[in-house]
Length: 373
Image 1 (spheres, rainbow, N blue to C red):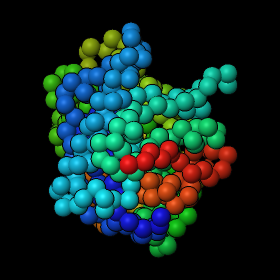
Image 2 (tube, rainbow, N blue to C red; image 1 turned 120 degrees about the vertical axis):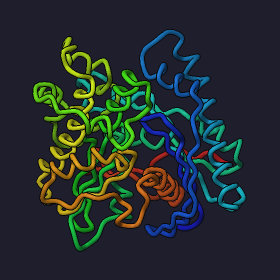
Image 3 (spheres, rainbow, N blue to C red; image 1 turned 90 degrees about the vertical axis):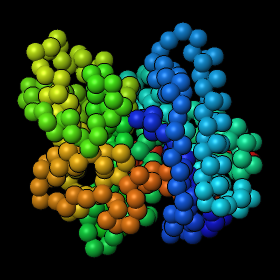
Image 4 (tube, rainbow, N blue to C red; image 1 turned 180 degrees about the vertical axis):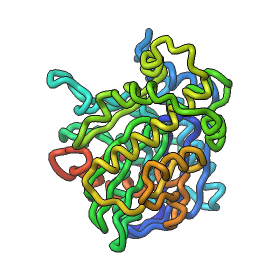
């Protein structure tokens, strides 16, 4: 199955909404036909936050949330198809990333610890509720093959956004940020760079009750605290090379509080400014330390709308063009959802979806399980 209509579903680390995208795919060529952002109820966001940390009665709560999210992913699909004027029978498949609640990749584990990753959003429920073939659980086959299980977007970035005329970095700034480094048409490297929006969102919510920093205005009005930035960048993740991925298991408010070390003398707005600088600095560190001569950087994800963050990134990459993926033909809000529509198409066509040079897997693998509609 090399062509047809595919739905991609994504709920990321920021836990704000389900992104749903309808694509017509023909090989590596695609057209984005319709999009829908499906709000997550506050209670669901609370359940996700709670299950992301060790607690009582986890298996019971995990099972209930898996079904709850499956129903929401199905509802998001139906709303998308209604908006697009399409019937379920016209859709070849749904590709659903699911909601990550644990990510323990091999790069962050001791040799005697098993690596694993876990995403919720029951694909059986999605298939049953929509009547559409659903492809899901994309990460775990790469983990089983010795890989990181993430990031998975670089293979799509290479297929859809590479050009022979320049070396590009495609940077997704979601809760966690990741970069795909393209030397002409070749995918050379890809990795999570570190925190994207997650610390920024949690810090402003703690101190101002707002879910995110609109346009980065609050951070822009503060000043960077050099000692704090140095302490944050001392995290061992930033010194790693080779295949690597991370998540909120490492970069969270508890870790930030430990770095603050009772630094109540710091203005909270200045902490926000420092967190924005951390995101920009860690992205630039990953790109500049890669050995790939990057000429153009294109940003997608929620961070693409953060004016302050984009300006910080441009300052850190002074000799590089920095823009959003809109400049190369795809709205930055829908790149990740499009990725999982593309991965579903690859799975049904019997084609690998991972990039071993990114994840460190032993070789190319067909990703995901197929759940009949």
